[in-house]
Amino acid sequence: MSRWFPSPMLSIGLLLTWLTLVQSLEPAHWLLGSVLAILAPILARPLQPHSYARIARLPALFRLLGMSAVEIVRSSFNVAQIILFRRSEGVNSQFIRIPLDLRSPHGLALLSCLINMTPGTVWVDLLPERHELLLHVFDLHDERWWVETIKASYERPIIELFEAPPSSGQGGKA
Amino acid sequence: MTELDAMPWWAAVTVSFLLVLGGLIALIGTLGLLRLKSFYQRIHGPAITITLGTGCILIASMVYFTVAQSRLVIHEILIAVFVLMTAPVVTMLIMRAAVYRTPRTGTEFAAQDDAPKQDPKQDEDARPT
Image 1 (cartoon, chains in turn brown, cyan):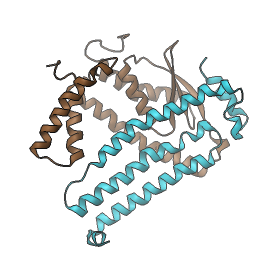
Image 2 (cartoon, one colour):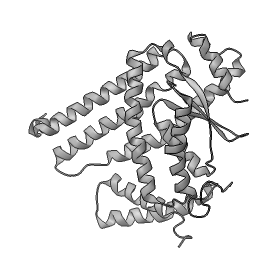
Image 3 (cartoon, chains in turn blue, yellow):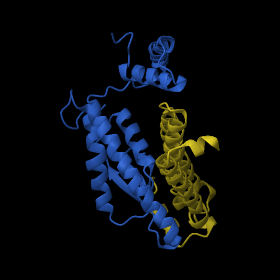
Image 4 (cartoon, chains in turn green, red):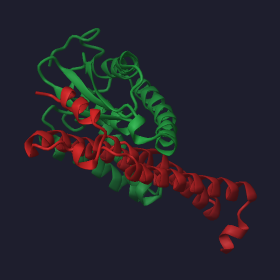
């Protein structure tokens, strides 16, 4: 099973992408899409240094993405408002540090994408010595609030997504 | 124009509203490049164009073609997915290039752009190393 389907989620995603791309549900396209969905993950497996991600709970992923979508819309309007009505000198742009418990490379990749998608925050670097995230915030009001928000609403769900079944909580120093 | 005339009014209103909103957001994002003074502030401007601006225009496209062709047209979702997967990587790349470039050139990156005095110092404090 795992030899032929190293990543079932990736296979399903590729099949859906193919069907959406050709805009058709004919059997021929199902066949071609399935071939692609089976072959591509097998061929691409050597390119993945950390092997494919295992997502424990799919509903949790969708809940996280939905929450991020709401957050993106909300902060888009905030950033637009700042650009339109505030002077550049008055905007308090700062670097802040956030200590992270998340260790999974896939989880860190997802976290960085979600943070960079949200307007007003840019992931700069992961400081290796104490495993801190260096984050640039467009308009900083309260550093503590940012640390708590990132840890509670982004990091915790991602830890549960990727590291839930084997190690309860946030152990797993991989 | 015949397709647009044949559209029901609610679809026409939705499509126009989303297109105007998406266009405005793209304009505001670009305006950010012009108005914000330091590099680290300017990097946040186009982010709203990428997410909300693209989103509005793609939803408008989905509604328009779904109504005009009387079938479900949703392959614009793929554009959204690929934009949302690649844009964060590019943002991070540009940001890190800026951070690493600053000490090498000797002059503050932000100072070249007539940034306020405290800005380079804050950046200096928070930089790794």
